[in-house]
Image (cartoon, rainbow over the protein chains, first blue to last red):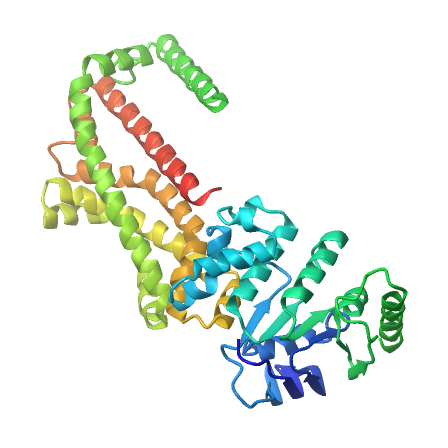
Length: 241
Length: 243
């Protein structure tokens, strides 16, 4: 993995003349976990998709890219709300999907190693439909790690999980993705309070940084400081919309 | 097991009604023979029927194999190339406006009285359903999968082969299931127009000689063969692609 760049964006997005967001500017610091928190429909996912080079359906005016000036293509991994596992491939093949898609050799040993790190060492030969929702999302995390990209884009990857599984996935992801530039789109104040080293509040008015507590992430879900931060984030959300 | 029992009881009921109509309406056997007579003919002429059935089965299987292969390849070509889509799709739809049955005499003229004119007929009749079912499924790949693949730097060709084709296989399977039912129709039409062997030929021959019992016997064998073929294709598709 090359060293993780910061991400920058300044501009506005329209679809067929209708404003989606902006003009606004965004700074995602290098090698840190940034939560982009906001209600549904303010264009969080649209913004995230620009960095994944998936913005071809929207009109973007402005500039965006990595701080080092190098193209982001091939340096980004994406994890979405749906696990996007291919039902016809077993778990190991799903984890090595990127290599299969690029037609390069599939590094099986590394895949098994990563599966062990997400706690699925014994599930490599199973089909996705034999796994629980939490296990499937862990396979998606393993697939993301397998890509070994410096920039990780997370589009509400834990929102479909139950509270307990979600908390475990947050811990695991924070541990395994540490050191990379993570841009995590979420509408859940509790999640942003636990994971955000930087928390950016996105509303129709634009993006506002929120000062986060000094404790390192993942912050304990039951610590007074985390809960107070969660309350503060929710209050700010309520006030702006 | 329950399905077999259900099917058997419906078949039995049908035959009872059939026999009752023949008995009470006092229909002569050259108009409508009863099921008893048909099954006794089926048994006494079993070697004759089997001989012709083998011919028809061969035509159907070759037609099915070729039609499925050609349909698979065409759908991929249509998806991969916008040019092919613009040129070929209207032609495909237009070809469906021609009744395939009307082509049978020409196929016999071009390909002769033997096996290949019937294979061609079966192929023509299944080509469109297979192509269309597979093509539609290929065009409906979940967008999120394709986007994930794009973020992973996959070329369009790799995305087609590693994501869209496997994702569309259930659609191909529905095309195949339809094809399994249509292919025998094609072979029989081919045999009616000109043949010296096969179940369709046998039926026409029996009809011409007022051997309606033999005609019905051949018809029943044909129907059973079609059902078995459909069940086999269905079982194979389920085993490979599930659902």
